[in-house]
Picture 1 (cartoon, rainbow, N blue to C red):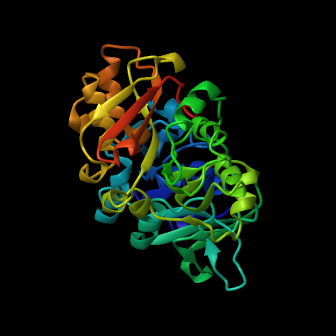
Picture 2: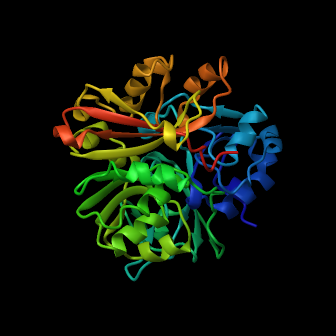
Amino acid sequence: MMDLASVVRPGDGIICGQACAEPQTLLEALVAQRSRLSGCRVFLGANYSGIVKASHSDHLQLTSYGGIGHNRALSDAGVLDVLRIPYSRIAAFIRSGQIRADVVFVQVSPPNGRGEYSLGLAADYLVPALDVCRAIVAEVNDQVPWTHSERVLRKDDFDLIIETSRPPAEARVRGADRAIARHAAALVADGSMLEFGVGALPDAVCEFLGERRRLRVHSGTIGDGVVDLMLAGAVSEVDCAMLIGSRKLFDFARDNPRIRLRSSEYTHGAEVLGRIERFVERCVRDDGRTLDASDLQQLPCDERTRELGDAWSLAQRAANKRRQQILADEFLAGVDGMRAHRALQQRTSAQRTELIALPDVERDGNDVRAVLLGQPMDGVR
């Protein structure tokens, strides 16, 4: 097994690829050698592999931006430091050193004919981390596709490298309510820009969008459902931060210039989002109400999307108008709304529900509508 101590120093900050982009072999080496690397602070992101366990906190400090996947168990055990920042700010925190990126553990594809290693399944906050880190440790996995990622690497960029062949980590996804998906899809007009979050609901919504035309995708993640939309001619090209799906998605994305993996500074940047017309956002929220398909309600919100600054604020404002008792500075992006979650836990069972926020295209985008949905959040246990 590789000797991580040749690159990693005790007390280093380590950024790891997340979700399907987890460098599993590197994480296995890290937990096996953790006694020699005591005090390292490991930023996990979405944790699908479950390799890092609560017992590994005896030498490692574990951090993340939320409770996705196996992070829930780490949080329940009291060993995960959940950073109270929106996902859109993670890159800035990495660049400023508030999230330390001394070493980056990254899963990459084999090189192309030009000797370029792709980031494969995720660019997201790895791009800024690669810009500021002292060392890069790479797992070259031949089951990871070469994709058109914003940053490519060469062998000289790696301080330590290991070659592997193993399936990427996968999310544990439960089925989504197709009735909810059908209601949500009815709100998506031709020419809309789509954003998808984690879980089963995005792919379920995609099932009902195959006859739409001129759809665009600017998203934190995409799943298998986007493949079907592209094959049907509903979507022509995609900008996203991560691929979260199955071999179907990975094979379709292989050397496909119509799917571009971008930094989270681009996919979640307020200035970029503010320029997008007809932006349809599906994100996950912690909320105290349990709804079902018959309880869908459209919630008016007067502010224009482009004036909100960070598009995630849209969901917060809609929730406030429903008198959910969530303070403006506590309603955070995506699944990292942990302060809001804790506040809600004090007075409710905090059942997780889905929220869709989108411009009211019937009024030329001048108003905003939000729809709360009752599908339990997937990928979190």
